[in-house]
Length: 270
Image 1 (cartoon, rainbow, N blue to C red):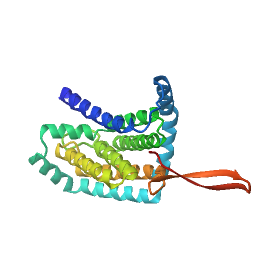
Image 2 (spheres, rainbow, N blue to C red):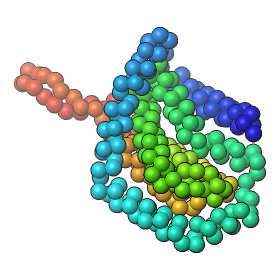
Image 3 (cartoon, rainbow, N blue to C red):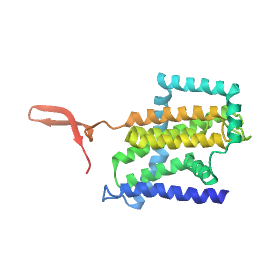
Image 4 (cartoon, rainbow, N blue to C red):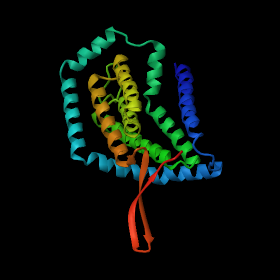
């Protein structure tokens, strides 16, 4: 089973990396050297990412609307688990297999937080090497959202420490579901429904798969989905560029014969 996971996981990661590199290589002819890329990326990951994720987490979890959404989801999750709903759903999934072996393993890999970090890392390294500031910032935002989601999920798992339907530890909330919805939410914020809807569909399939295999209760998936959605949308929305007719809006300051002046620049890359 481990060889099976590795084989298909490697293929999926290579495919994702290839797509990112294919679209990225067409937009810039100048690239950082290998040494510059390694030094810059290591410095960013070690010094900047923890500060960025901490700042983004404060911004996310101290918002009243986000706290309300998470508390409601938590309440719904508790109700599901303390009633017959979780047991009934788990029994139904146990009696009806929903996915073939290949589909099951593929969704497990697609929904893995490790896969999400790998894709975001390739996105970041490629855009940084091409000096593509917009995509570097978007990949950086994705890494921050995934980091916040991952740490929050692990913390909650350690606190609650309940078992899954198939007897595994650390059930609530579902890490695969939370990370998948965070990934989809960031893409939705940056690229709109054309990318967001397929990403949400994939995240939903991941959540269904986690219940279908007995790896998680319905309550685990419900809260994981809301957690990922809240973090992804809040973090990405915080850094989303303002655009007018496809042009990026950037502040402008300068001087003229009449003194200082301020305004905006409309910038578009071709």
